Image 1 (spheres, rainbow, N blue to C red):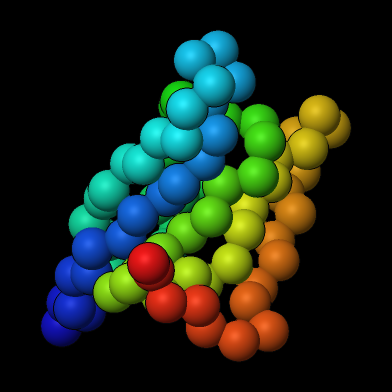
Image 2 (image 1 turned 180 degrees about the vertical axis):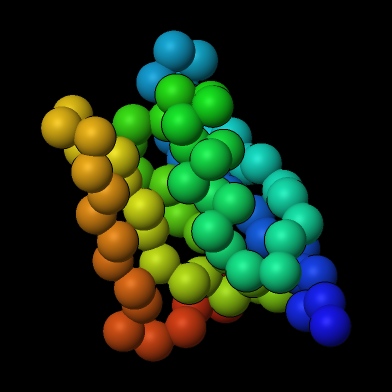
Length: 78
């Protein structure tokens, strides 16, 4: 049985153009964000959103690891 597909957004600061960029993707869960960050070479923190609520931030370290910081409370998108 397949799970429900959700629409997630990954928001990050693009240093080359000094703008905020958002990538939206569909997945059963947020794991696809890691692949997107690797493919797009996103190294700084990226905030992941689901249904207008922030789930937390993901940072790819220079050593190839990941730092995950969940939200203490859910923030609502402006």
